[in-house]
Structure formats: C-alpha cells, structure tokens
Length: 197
Image 1 (cartoon, one colour):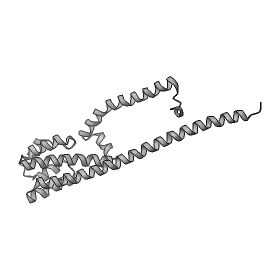
Image 2 (cartoon, rainbow, N blue to C red):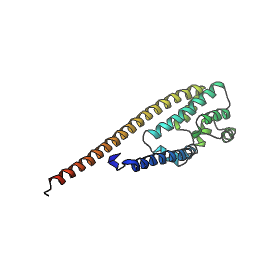
Image 3 (cartoon, rainbow, N blue to C red):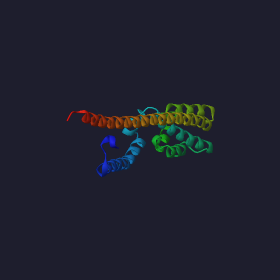
Image 4 (cartoon, rainbow, N blue to C red):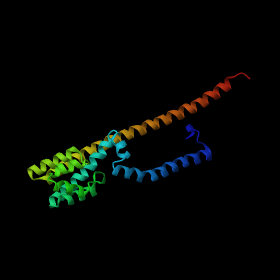
C-alpha cells in the first residue's frame, strides 16, 4: 500500500480501520437492503437498473416462484395455498392470499387475478393463462421456471465476468500508480544527484 501512502504502523491502522468500516457498513446495510428488495422499495428500483445483475435477480426470483407454484399445482392445492407456497419461495413476489381469493370470488380467472396484483412478470402470467386454458398449469409453470433459471444463470455469469474485469482493472490501476510513484521517487533522487554542489 506504499503507492497510497499507507506505510508503517499508522498506514496499517488506517487500512484495517477502512476494512472494519466496510465490514460494519455491510453488516448494517444488508438487512435494510434485503427488506427494501422484498417490499419493492428503493433497493429493487436501484437493482433493476444494474446491468445483468438486476435482470438475473428478477429471473431467479421468478423461477423460484414458478417452481413452487408448479409443485403446488401438481399436488392440487387451492389457488390461495399455491400463492402462499410460491410467496414463501420468492418473498419479493409475495402475493396476499386474501386479496387473490377476493378477486377469484369476483369471477376473475387465476391469471387475471394475479395480473391485477401486479407483482408477477408477464411471462409467468402468460404461462398461467395458457396452463388454465389447456389444463396443465403445473407443466407450463415448470417450463417457464426452467427458462427463467437459465436466464438467471446467464445474467449471473455476465455479472461475474463484469466484476472480474472491474477487479482486474482496479488492480492494474493500483499497480500502475505504485510504479509511477516509485519511479517518480527514483527520478527525484537522480535529479538531486545530478545537481552541482
């Protein structure tokens, strides 16, 4: 850390203090961010705008909801129980059971009732509508869960590659800064030695 001026015991104390501050900040912020994501707050709004990672997180959440709903549909659970199980699997897409059951009692089909809640991606709603028309909701939800899982994997892989590139670029910048700093010290020493006495 010589290039940053962190030398000796004082530099070590500053560096360890910075690391401790980052760890403490992360420990405090993580539950707040997780709650905001689950409640569709500011974290979800910011997360949607992060390239690759935002779409991967939404796809993974949709896949978890679809997979749980597919399993519930296979076992013949009621729509309210299906929504409870799927909401437990993907809290960010949770739907209030009483709200859904009220819409179903008003004569809406399952896809319409879920669409009015506004939490689920269009792809899942379309799969539910097709499944209701064809009588195989569980199978269509299973297929859409597979597609969403693949999209989440692709998005996560792209995000990991981007983070790797950024980390590599930061290390390269630190090395360049260190080399320039050391070289400037040597140049200064050579200039001082070349001056006439």
